[in-house]
Image 1 (cartoon, protein in one colour):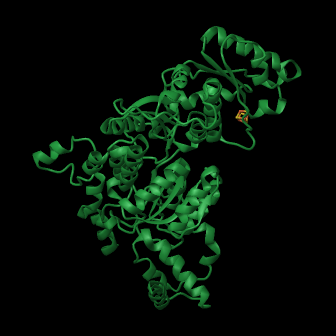
Image 2 (cartoon, rainbow, N blue to C red):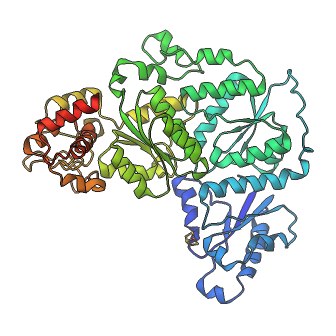
Image 3 (spheres, rainbow, N blue to C red):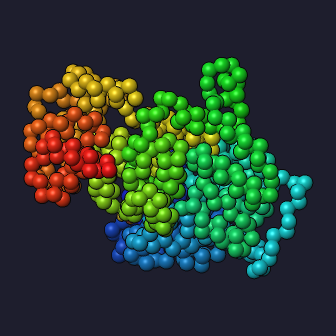
Amino acid sequence: MEGVHYVLHAPQGDTYADLLFTMIERRDQRPPVTYTTFQARDLGGDTAEMVKTSVRDAYNRFSPQVMLVGESCTAELIQDQPGSLAESMNLPIPVVSLELPAYSKKENWGASETLYHLVRKLLLSKALPAGTQRPERDLAIRPKANIIGPTALGFRCRDDIQEVLKLLGEIGVDANVIAPLGATPEDLMRIPDADFNICLYPEIAQTTCDWLKRNFAQPIVKTVPIGVGATRDFVAEIGEVAGIDVSQVLNRSRSETLGNWNVSRVASSAIPGASRMPWYSRSVDSTYLTGKRVFIFGDATHAIAAARIATEELGFTLVGIGTYSRKFARQVREVAKQHGVEAVISDDYLAVETAVAEAAPELVLGTQMERHIAKRLGIPCAVISTPIHVQDVPARYSPQMGWEGANVIFDDWVHPLMMGLEEHLIGMFREDFEFAEGHMSHLHTAPPQEGNVDGVAAPTDEPVASNDAKHKSMAAAPDADVDSMGWSPDGLAELKKIPFFVRGKVKRNTEKFASDRGITSITVDTLYEAKAAIGK
Ligand code: SF4
C-alpha cells in the first residue's frame, strides 16, 4: 500500500524482512516499515519508550495517513503493548493496533488480519445499519467491483490483476478499488462505492470480504479465475452478481483453435476472451499427458485451482493433494475425496516429502519447498504457489489467472515433463550412451537418478544418467524396510525395463502384492501376476 506506515517492535536483525521486498520482489524502495530494533542491553531499560520514539520519528519523517503498530515474536514475549502505547500518543492520524500471535498463527493469517483491521478502522463509522439492503443498481451505470486480496509477495499478483482487469473490461465492469496492493487509505475509504467485491485471494481477502458483506451488504464473487473452466465460472458468477449479460464473452472463450498458423487464426489469437490452453491440451502432442500422475501442494487457493486444471483441462490423474492453509483444509479435503486420495494438511515439509514419495507421481506442482523435494526424488516439478524464490517474480508477463494465465500454466507445467518422442524412445532403447534413463534433453540436464530410481539399484557399469550424481535418490527412504524383502535378479532386470517415471509406482504395487501373499523373492512372474491383479 501507499500512505500507510508500519512500526514493528522487533529485535535487531528482524530487518531481514526488508530483503523479501527489495530482493525477491525487486522493489525500488525500502518497505514502509520502521523497526524498533532493540538489543539485549535494551532489555534492562525501557523498551516501551523505544516504541514511542519510533512511532514519533516515523510519523515526523514519513507523514503517513495511517499507522500500523505491531510486534514480532520476540517483542510479543516482553509485552510492551506497542499498539496501545501508540494509540495513547494521540497522533492526528488513525493508528491500527495489530495483535498477531506469532506462536500460533502464520504469514497469510497476519496479512488477512491486518487488512481486515485496517479496513474496519477506516470504514466502521460508515457501516450501514444491520439489515439494510443495497439499493438496486442503476442499470444505466456500469457495475463497479473491488478486487480484494492481491499483496506484495503474493504469487504473480502483479500480473493477475492485469488479467482480471482485462476480464472485467470484456464484460463491462469497472474496477473501483484494488486492495491492498497499490492502494492508499483514501482508496480503502471508497470500497463501499462498489457493487460487489471480488475475493481474489481468499487466504488474504475472505475475512475482509465477509465483514464488508455484513456491514455494507456487498455481495462476494468467490470463484478464483485460475484455469479456463474457473475463468468461465468467474465471468458467469460476475454476470449473476452484477446482473449483466456475459454470454458473448463466454461464447467467445469457446473458440478453441487459437494461436495456429493461417493468417486469420493468427489474427484471431489477438481477440481477447479465449485461451490457447484448450486447443493445446487437445492437440495430438498432448495425448501422452493423459493420465500423468500429479501431486499438488501449496496454499489452498492455488492447490484447488491446480487440481481442477490438472484433471479437467490437461487430463492428468491426481494422486495427491495438500495444503499448508489450515483455514481452508475442508475445501482441500473435499477435492482430495473427489479423487479418492487423502489430503495432506500440514506445514511439515517432511510429511509432504513422505506423501510425495509414497504417491510416486510423475509431476509435482508445489511451492519452492516441493521443488527441493522433487529434486531429491528425481521428479519433474513446477511451482504453483508461495513460498517462492526470486525466479517466480519474473520480468515477463506471467499471470496465473484469466485466459493468458491458462496459457502460462500450460507452458510451465508441461515444460518439466519429458517430451513425448523422447519418452517413447527411452522406453524402447535403454542402452543409449547419451539419452539414458531419466535424461531429459530439452532441459539440458536430468533429474538425479544415480541409476537408482526408487531404490532400484543400477548395475555399476551402466551409464550414470544424471549430471548431478552426488544427489542420492531419496525416494526409497520412506519404505526402506520394503527393499529388504528382496527382488530376484530376473525380477529386478524386468523391473528396470519399465520406464523410470512409473517404475516407483510399479515397484511399490508389486511389493505390496508380494507381501500380502507372503512371497519373499519377487521374480518376473510375481511382477506380472501383480500387474494382472492390479489391472483387474
Ligand atoms: S525468531 Fe522472531 S523475533 Fe527472532 S528473528 Fe525470527 S522473526 Fe524476528
